[in-house]
Image (cartoon, rainbow, N blue to C red; front, top):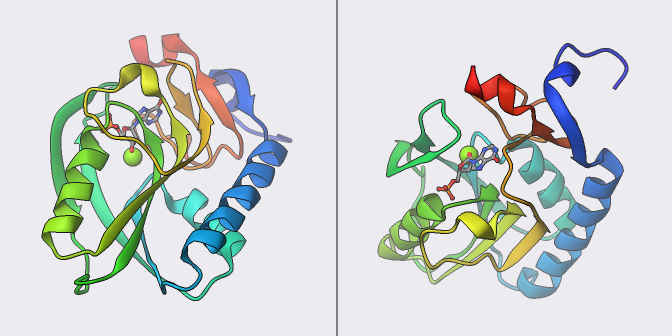
Length: 184
Ligand code: IMP
Ligand code: MG
């Protein structure tokens, strides 16, 4: 990065912009193969999905719709509270739709377990889960992603949409946050 006052808080780079671009391209192709004839509805989980979603829907290049849902289970800490709240609901009927949920990271699984159940209860025909990152070591709910970008170690990561206390979302790569940043 040429000039950034965020770099000093990053311990190390986990995935570079180029690695992310390559992987997202593959994920887009995979989605095309699975969903191109299904007019799917992408449902992005705000706010973390916003950069990934923008790249993924362009990598997939298929006839589809998109929509966002706001969910919150984090309260400015690095751990999930386990309680999921809808902060912005869907704006349309999803009855009978083939849904592709787009999430930044699957951690404890509380958020996606809740969301999958919510979408099925609202009448979705199918709910597929795409996550950029997967941290399986921390799973509390029995939920798996249908497509995941990278499996990450049990460290707190930021960038490419992922935040700590709403900061660092605009770091263009994925990096491990220095523990002293969140332990102070
Ligand atoms: P879960 O409900 O514990 O699976 O958490 C999912 C949400 O927690 C994600 O959408 C992220 O917002 C947040 N999260 C979990 N791990 C990290 C991380 O390492 N960095 C940034 N956000 C994270
Ligand atoms: Mg999030």
